[in-house]
Structures are given as C-alpha cells and as structure tokens.
Length: 178
Image (cartoon, rainbow, N blue to C red; front, side, top):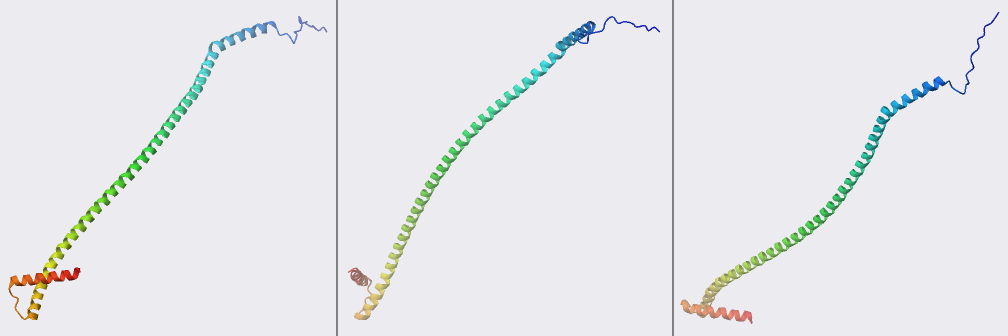
C-alpha cells in the first residue's frame, strides 16, 4: 500500500502572510482610503464644521442676546429711576399746588368772612340807628306825654316838642356816658 503522499512545496509561516493576500489587502485598503478621503471625510468635515459653526453661532447669539438683555435691563433701570424722579417731582409739585390752593381758599374764606362780618356790622349799625331813631321817636312821644302830665301843660306844638325831646335825649346820653 502505497500511500501517495504529496508533498507540499513548503508550509506557510504563520507569522508572515501570503504575498497575494498582502497585495489584495493593500489594493483594498488603497481603494477604501481613496473612497473615504474623496467622499466620506469631506462630508464629515462639512458636518463637523456646520456643527462647530452652529455651536459657536449659538454661543455668539446667546452672548449677543445676553448683552442686549443687559442693555435693556440697564435702560429699564435708568427709565425706572427717571420715572421715580419724575413721580417725586410731580408729587412735590402737587403738594405745593395743594398748599397754594389751600392758602388761596383760606385767603378767600377770610376775605369773604371779613366781608360778611363788615356787611353784618353795617346792617347792625343801620338797624341800631333805625332802632335808636324809632326809640327816640317813641321816647320823645312818651317823654312829651309824661312831661305834659307832670307839668300839666300841653306840649302839642311840634317845634317845641322836638326841642324838648332833643334836650331830653341829650341829657340821657350825657348821663349814660358820664
């Protein structure tokens, strides 16, 4: 029995690959590297750049919005301070106006009060004079009647009676004053 043993030309070294595999692997790697560099990497670079721009743009927009918000806040604070100052000025003016109006009203009230008092005094003086005239007339009549009864003579003469009445009233006033 013969066994035919075929001899292999030589056994491959497990450490060194076969040269055909190296060539096929090298060509495949070159094609893959070419495709990646020509098509994939530029798209990845564009996507990466777009994301970086979006992030940086977002940061810049956020910083810009923050700056605008700070500016708006400062404007608001300035307007608020100005409004408070204006409100204080208006309040002070209103108080001054109210005090002026109060003083005017008090002055007018005093004037009106003085006018009413003066009118009342004039009316009282007029009434007093009218009452004094009326009383003088009545007192004169009563005095003449009384004197006529006491003296026993008639004092009917008007001129004589006026003189007697006037003398009597003058004597009364001097007695009252004295």
